[in-house]
Amino acid sequence: MGALVLKVKKLRECAILPKYMSDAAAGMDLYSANEEDILLMPGKRAMVPTGIAISLPAGYEAQIRPRSGIAYKHGITLVNSPGTIDADYRGEIMTLMINHGGEPYVISRGLRLAQMVISQVFRPKIIQTDDLEETGRGSGGFGHTGHK
Image (cartoon, rainbow, N blue to C red):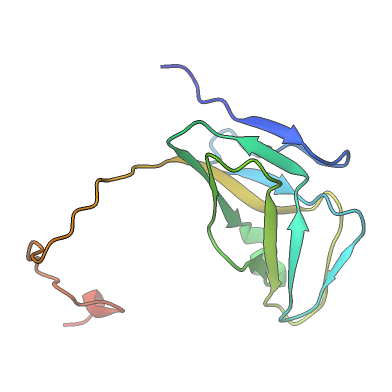
């Protein structure tokens, strides 16, 4: 089986193609392609363009995830995390950023703002039933497994 091919189209001249930053990285960095700086105030959100569109083969998705560095240092992350890019989407990849920090943050063109991880998608056949298999956990959730 050959290597998976990800086709990337630049939609803006200033766009930077995604890059893996290490040999074993699971995610490739995505870069901002905004024309002007975006001042992201504490508690506010902004839609930041990447300037790229992708073509994934059927059966795959791209997950858009926060970068830990700017999350830790500045409180900047993604509102919908992970975001999903479906195999049939051909529009520009946008990132919905939020500032959870205490200071304004400037998103300038070329900032490494998110990561993109390519994953295989499994689509099961959905069957309605009145009975589910019993387990030791049952319906316990929201912290249930850590208590005795």
